[in-house]
Image (cartoon, rainbow, N blue to C red; front, side, top):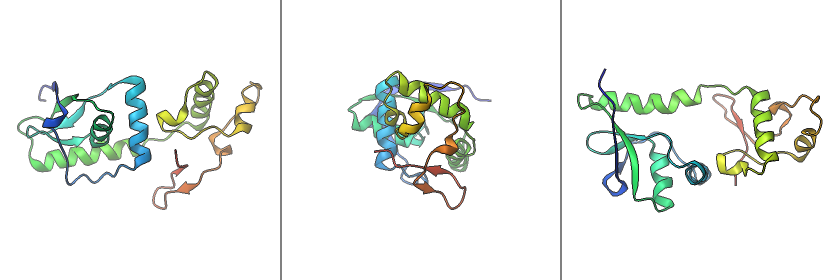
Length: 165
């Protein structure tokens, strides 16, 4: 296993992957911006030795939009082939999608954050339905994400979501 090489470099030295299979909507970039502003960069983006970003293109776009001039990068091993870098880029995006939420824990955590004033849209979640917000006063009521109304459903995987504006 190759040692992980991490550096802080000028954003202007990085190249967004022109063949990135992952698309980033304005809403997605805005959520990443919200996260970067609240928490800073907590994980490096990944680039090849030629400074092509293969994981973290959305983070790079968001960082540029908020005016950052430097970003932390983890580099792929020097002996990786183009195909290895491409496979890693796809795996990095896909493995995150394959995880499931524990809907009860998610709902409770969102309610807790909302109750102390967090702007949920800043971390990529829709505003809570007021009827769910009222339930936080009743700790005996079970809250389930299944109670929420979702605007969209992915035809391939069934993931349900709302637009975050």
